[in-house]
Amino acid sequence: MTMKLTEKRKSKILEKYEKISSSWTPARGDAACLIGLFAASFPAVPCGPFRNLEFEKCVAYKKNGHNWENYMALSSTAIEEVEGWITEYNVNSAVLYKKVKFD
Image (cartoon, rainbow, N blue to C red; front, side, top):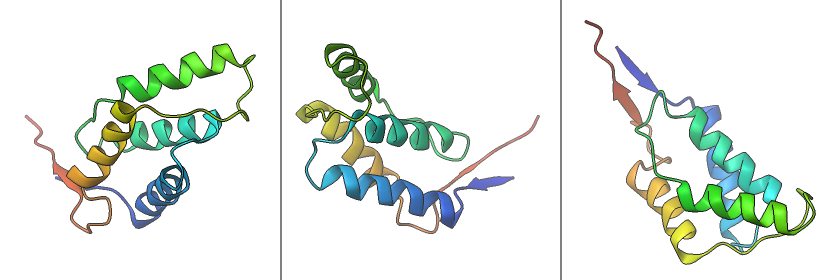
């Protein structure tokens, strides 16, 4: 069985990535949305490490009075995580998939 991301899912990920990568100072809600889109794709795509992105989102949320609309600056490590996932799994590719074996 082959699982792959739908075109709709890929376009959602790319749209959010483009919005965030234009300045790398996203609203925390946008960062949370990107994390959610990545996590939702994990059944079809190998997991990526988003510890730094998740940690930075949570710290910024707490520091700024629990407001999702405030902006946050991403560290170079968090940016590398996001760009690495986009590049490594080539979200633009039509062959983004994972083969699944059932015992």
